[in-house]
Length: 425
Ligand SMILES: *Cc1c(COP(=O)(O)O)cnc(C)c1O
Image 1 (tube, rainbow, N blue to C red):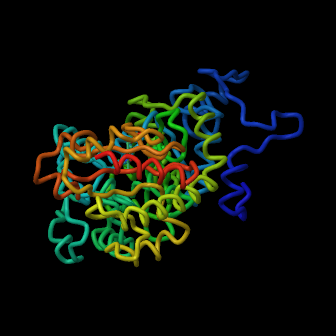
Image 2 (image 1 turned 180 degrees about the vertical axis):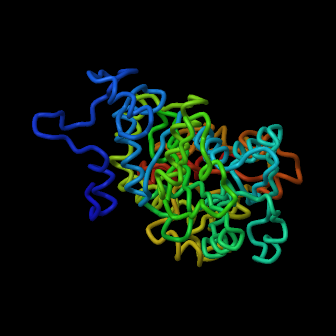
């Protein structure tokens, strides 16, 4: 592994290192299985004594190269790709949390994650307390319980666009002696590397900027290798796993215990595997991640500034605007850019918002973000539809809010399309 590469170089070349005569470009290993000559070697792979692929539900060379690229970009000790971001989040939590236990989460989460935590995990006996991200440390700690097993949050909240105070949340996680799990989908590792600021586990919806072209659904978990699981709270990592002939993950794999268990136990059992073809596509997307994130951020800031001065706009929210409440945090944790998502309020509320969106031509109405194409969405009636009025407020969503995922087209064309749509409402 070439450790000294800068992020742009890892984007292009990380994770795949062909030997002489092998394909220059990462091949799609469209094979479910792998040939062996010696049954003893295969037995050792089954026992996790030796590394190697045996069945593509658990690992595959194309998927492994993509996992390693994202792992290198994040600066972790190992990555695990999944069939979606939701699958990554589910495995990341279930890997260390079981019925009768508790998670402390921020209230400004992506709608799908909020529902997963508040409804589905609850049915399986995992309790979640959602806290306002801006509360002070003591108050947040007062919501923790003896059975709290993780702190869960997002680098940039979707769609509140609040920036995570890593110092505060890593302190909270350290006091509770539980890992800090951070969804780093919005900035991607190009704009922010959460492990540098105390996160222990990173999750991604690779569907968004990592893919970048709205072609593939996928997810990734990256293990920072920086949490001591041997603190009495995580017997599933320190005690024998009966489903794996008594293996003790922490004893055998030390700083890679978490990610090894996630693969050999949960990915094996649940089977939410990324396909080799999708891994190939996501790897291709990552080859230009650094260039795209720079342009997404540059265009978003320009559009935010344009909207700020517009008479039909009542408010604009983008972390790189000086008046944003988290501007200082964005300077500290997102020095290279604020990513491509902004929100704004249109005067006249929901009805005008709908009219405005109908008037757009270049910009399309889609349920997505992170695409090279600029798009808009009305969160209250779509992605966060399952939330009630109170929950909407806690998630930072108002009825007049339009979310824009600013693409990498020429910014003048994007602004012209907005101008035209405003003029017709
Ligand atoms: C989209 C998204 C998810 C869910 O990912 P999928 O790939 O759609 O399953 C999770 N977190 C954030 C921040 C997202 O934007």
